[in-house]
Length: 387
Image (cartoon, rainbow, N blue to C red; front, side, top):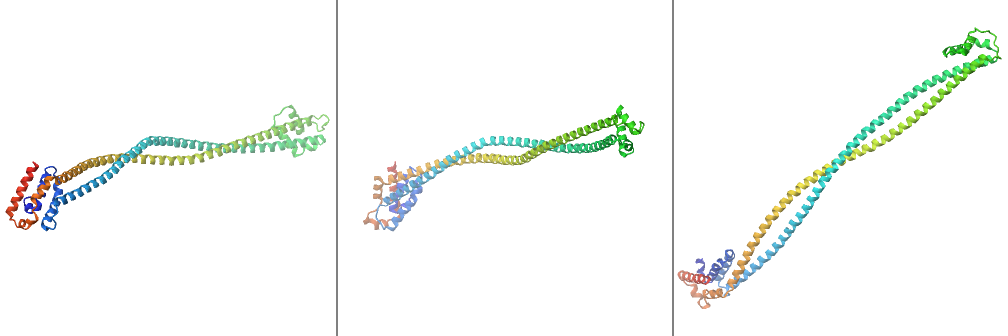
């Protein structure tokens, strides 16, 4: 510091700097460039203006710049602080929504899976019922075919027998009994009577056909003719009953077939609809599970991000408070330095240390020893004044 005082104009600045350092160490950093400027002022000797005023002006400019930068940084920090608050609130809302959604989605998944299981059971039952209905139609068709065949055979038999009886009755009524007995119809009638249960009347007719009675037949008695007519009526009645039974069987078969076909159609429609529904529910289950996984993953991500956000915002807040503290110290150091340089003591010290215009040449020519002595004296006075 004594070496810098080899320049007369620099000595007051050094003294003032030492005084300011007793209040704030930060001023050292700010004073060195200003000291260099004062040294340049001394060397060039281009101006006799008070260099302290220039230092004060520069410090005031620096003070204003520091204040402006502080305002800008404060505005940026407010925005960051707002981001922390808003982001935290948004994340908290998102997490709350996810925590509410997850149980609801899990419930939907269980319900959908239960619905699908029920649909699968319904489809299984519908298919079984449809197969049973088809089987019933097949069995009914088989029975119907057998019944139809039996009826056809029975009808043909009744038809032949009735026709034989009618021929016999016609021949007997015409008195052609002898000729009838020689015909094939008589042989058929004989077989018919032997096939039927043999009561007294039928045995009488059979005896007639076998020729054991008198060949002369008295038509007026009408005994044989009556018996044959009665037999024909019974056969006609049997045919009528068989026909009625066949018709009833056909009707029952048609009703059964219609009902089963209607049942099959309804079951087929249910199978188709529920098959589509099963596919939709299966897709819904997959989508719900994906949604659940995505929501759970998002919730974990939000928790991690919120924790990181809180940590970063807390760190930034601490850094900001420390930065504000340092800036306050800077501004305080600048303010105190400016106040010190503007004081009357600083002005008196400058006047004593700076040579007059008439002695400039002589002062430049001073020896190194005299300059050191002057600087030391100035330093002692400054220290005494600060004490």
